[in-house]
Length: 258
Image (cartoon, rainbow, N blue to C red; front, side, top):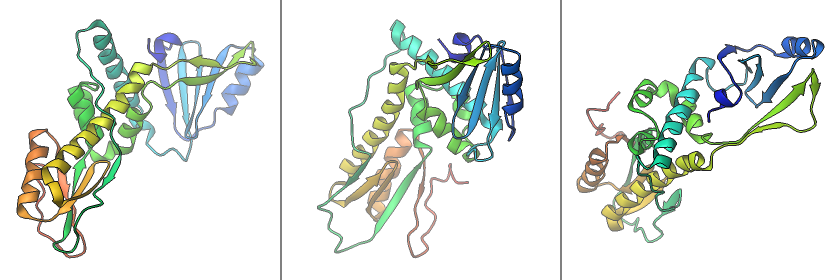
């Protein structure tokens, strides 16, 4: 069940760079029942079927992008329901390392280049079916990068609210238990990313130098670039070629250049 249903939230409102103090004092003074959740970037206040989000000045993503959290959560909940009902097949990818270095790489000849996968986690979330095509497309612009990563990272987390009854803070907070199965989706996205990196490392063989999350480094040859590009094209990824020291020709996938 979603947060909105559990807390019977019927409407939401965001107040940008505002303080909740005045409303909090009023609710306490009038001996009302309400919930408060504080994070480093915002305060969420819930009462009378309404949630008001007060954003702090230190918020790292614009309040206008809060819809991404809601869309990702709803998509993940629909996906989880399908998995539970057996209409959607989901298998956890094998656990792999975030970063891998080829300690046997021979750097005595040639130069190293790197290929960076654009929006790797976001794309994998769509490939696995965790987010819908509509959500993927709507938030695909680089402008949304930080927010969409945050929306994936917090999937299934338990939320802690301070609870006030009759305007009085209660000893025990109210917990909205997260879903372990939905938390596992973010782990699956990460493992799938590293699986792709490992597959390309295998293709490159001795010419593989290292990978770091969603970027792979290898000996720069035309053949090696083609191996990486062909693999990424086959699996539906956008990517860009990194440039080190000297200016190199732009070999970015022409369909994906910005």
